[in-house]
Structures are given as C-alpha cells and as structure tokens.
Amino acid sequence: MTVKIYSFGGGQMVEAMLRAALKKDVINANETGIVDIAASRIKYLQEQYGFSASREPDWDEVTSADIVILGVRPQDNWAAIMKNLVEHGYQHDVISIIAGVSLDQLTSADDQFAVTRIIPNTLTDVALGYSGVVKNDRANQANVEEFLNSFGKVEYIAESLLDVFTGYGVTGPNFIYNFLISFTNAGVLAGMPRQQANKLALENLKAAAAFVEQSGKHPAELLDINNSAGGVGITAQHELDKSSFASGLENAVVAAVKRTKELGKQNAGD
Image (cartoon, rainbow, N blue to C red; front, side, top):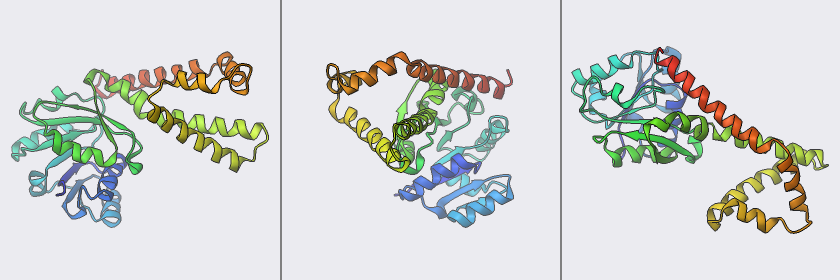
C-alpha cells in the first residue's frame, strides 16, 4: 500500500524526499500532487517524475491525501495554507519542513491538526542519515514514519533541539566531506597518487564507522587497540593531539548551530 502525498512547494528538498520515496515504492507518481509558483519547476516535476504539479492547489487531491507537506519558505504565507486546509476539511497528517515555525504556530488555525515537524537530512538518495522529528499527539506515527523512512532514519527529539539538530546533524555530512578531502590530501602529501589516496581514505572512513557500530566499543577503546607503544599510530595521534583538529570541529559545529538560530529569528521576524 502506498502513501498519497500532496505538497505545498516543490523545491529541491521536497523533490529529494519524493524522489527517494518513489524509488522505494512508498509513493506513486500519479498519486502525488504538488503546487508551486514557478512554471519552470512545475514543468520539470511533471516531465521528470510524472507528478501532478500545478500553480494552484487541487483541493480534491489535497483533501484525499494521506499526508500534506508544507514545503514553502518560512517567509511565505504558510498560515494561509493551514487556514485553507481547515476550510476544505482536511483531516489527515501534515508534515512541515518549514524552519523556525513551531508546532504551536502550525496548529494555531486548528488545534486538532495532526502535525509533524521534520528537519530532513541531505542524504535522501542513499536513504541514510537521520531526520530530526517532532510531532504532536494527534500525528499518525506509523503513517508518517512509513514516508520518512523511505529517505532515511527517524530521530525523535525535543522541539527545543531542532536548531542544534540542524547545525549538527543535518550539517554533519559537510564535516565528513571536509575530513575526507583533508585525509586524501594528507596521503597525496605523503607521496600517494591522488586516486589511490582517495580510495583508501573513503574505505577507511566506511570501514571504521562500520567497526564502531559493529563492535559497540567507544572510539577511544579502538584507538587504544591501534596505538601500540612507540608505534606509528601513537606517533600520528600525538600530532593530532597537538593540532587544532578537535577544537576546530567543535567550533564549526557551535558556529553552525548559532547561525541556525539567527536565521530562525530572522524568519520569525524578530
């Protein structure tokens, strides 16, 4: 059984979510409706995926959907969309990806709405990574999770932590990409051809992450195993300990979270 979706907004994040769900057969293209203001975007979504896309909402499609997605910008008139949902008698789940708009704000038009807020991850095409999720008591958890799990994993968090999740969890791949580039460059600096250095760096990254998960050990325990007395590993560890590697990463995360909060305040008009 597939999930019938209607999305207000057809931007890149909505597209990525729907593309993954389509790939997993969680949705059907002919049961997926999208409304967007850009004619070029509508044409693209129709031709690329076969979605029912238009510049004005089809309220028959909206009211029959299992899930309505709010994929508009924070500065757009999302409140009017919620009021229209009330007026047209929509009674199913609403998923919002609008940054900075709380559950209380989203349910101000009708406190009986079943609303779930998500901060989607950016790894939808591989269906990995966690999306940060906050829901109210009326949300159909099983129905919503079937859709969310099609483009990644689900992590329920306190609404107060959504900004932290955005700056840390969603931005997380950026830190990994930077590490991979730096590790590859280190191999090249030491004399390894770039293609081989990149292959070794990527495999080490994947294998080490898998080993941490499989072993259940803390990474510090695994370092102890690798760093024998007077050996190569502990020598490299000594140089890392002298560097700004750890503090640089920590400072970058804190800066990303701070910027997320600043953008949220701007979007709220504060």
